[in-house]
Image (cartoon, rainbow, N blue to C red; front, side):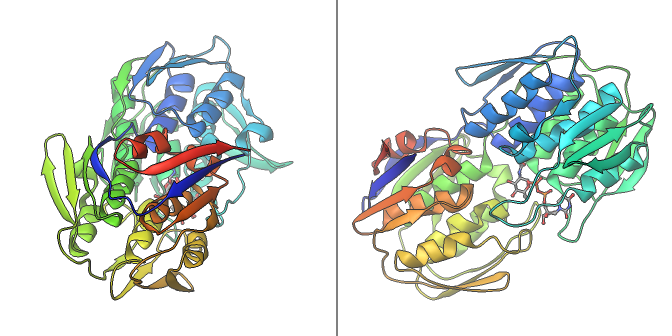
Length: 421
Ligand code: UD1
């Protein structure tokens, strides 16, 4: 297993580029492989384990996929298989995205029930509710979700759950309804940019979706969708992570292709903490000319503060003077990184879904373990800010969502290497 060894205390300086969005690519690749009747060429695709894992699922379903130089070629199969097996789905929660498209295209789908993960339970009830409202019959058998229908029929539905709208359920049901008979209205739809990117892609494939980026989506079903050429939006979470990297090391970093329009609240919170952000058409320059100050953060669905930036922000606040609080509104248990940061000298107390972070003057390097993707990212950030050596293990979590993280960070002056056992 690979580990990252970081010698901290270097101020980062220079330009770092943002790759395409992982969370936008995943459903878009599914739509291209299952809903379309011809090949697609998708540009600005990040080279990530999660994308490889999804392509393995799409191949089992009959599609041909080829990845080269940030471009993913997807050719749907002549015969599409209807079963996504446990062995592949367990590696890749987003495999649940194939459920809606398969049942829309074939009238039947069998997809292994995805489990929970380190960030807590991750139910799929809203995915199933939406598909049922379109007329799919759902059965759970032997750890599999089986969905069947003669033909999906458009419907009106409300898809918010106890923690707000669901990115995955909105994407799944929206994809299914593009091929349903008649009109579907999804109220309480997720407004995340990745859902909007999927909707834009579907429209280029020939779908008819209105209300993109809002909480009410109207989808008029069409008979067929065709392959197309498309470029994925930049990854706002990778961009946000690099912005924190600049701030946490007291550096001067230009984050190229950071999408200003998708980083509203993240930018606001960084500025409230005293980070200077200078935006250009091409990205953002990040500096910390003044002392940082404590802030309070509550994670929420878009356009609120993203749960996927919570861990990274906790890293920054752990060396920010004063007492900050972080309330997690989406995944109530998503604080596994707090105890690892404490091992590096942070002072973080978690009470329920709230973390109280008392800023320390500095962190010290330590051996630490990544428990999930963003928890891994904050350990790298903390390691770069800490005095001495930090060894981050279980970095396969980081590789799921950050393309060549050590090369990118080395490019702006970080002392970070990957070692294999
Ligand atoms: C997506 C992102 C993930 C991000 C999350 C929230 C992908 C591949 N992953 O995950 O990085 O952290 O959005 O922004 O895009 N819920 C239900 N029932 C459901 C589905 C979800 O109660 O059927 C709950 C979840 O437990 C959670 C909340 O709704 O509390 C939001 O989850 P959701 O938006 O669905 O997250 P994902 O799509 O799984």
